[in-house]
Image (cartoon, rainbow, N blue to C red; front, side):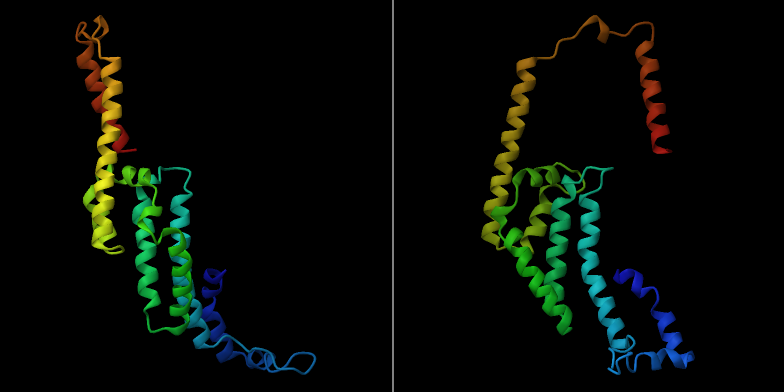
Length: 207
């Protein structure tokens, strides 16, 4: 709603300068009482600031609810981004935005303020992403939580990673891998298969 209103800021300003009836319309209503008046420059600045604050959450919600891609590996990045922005805005010189951000951060911390409230499997999905890995998790948490908390949490994540690896390794060992005649080259068919695979990957990159 704010985004739609901000698109017409220049239009309202031009009306105020060129149309004398625009300004007089706000002087009083049909009952002879004064109305709020047209939006002032201060109103537009506040609307712009509030829009910027709310857009942080809007963009994150769109990413988390996307039906077209996996979002578990982006969880930590987005949560930390919200944490950083709220902290920065709560310390800003703007009284309105600072008050709003402080109130939002208080609510945010009720759910995400403690490192123990974070689901470790969501962290695992991020750590297994080559774009982030364990160092990125430590980097983000160092900016939010205390060193002792981060150190203990990182140790727990490492232990969980080894446990997950051991589980999958045991499953692979128990099933075993057996070769068969189907795995053997037959009249150059494997060569053609690899060639097709290469062409398919190249086609996918250009899709």
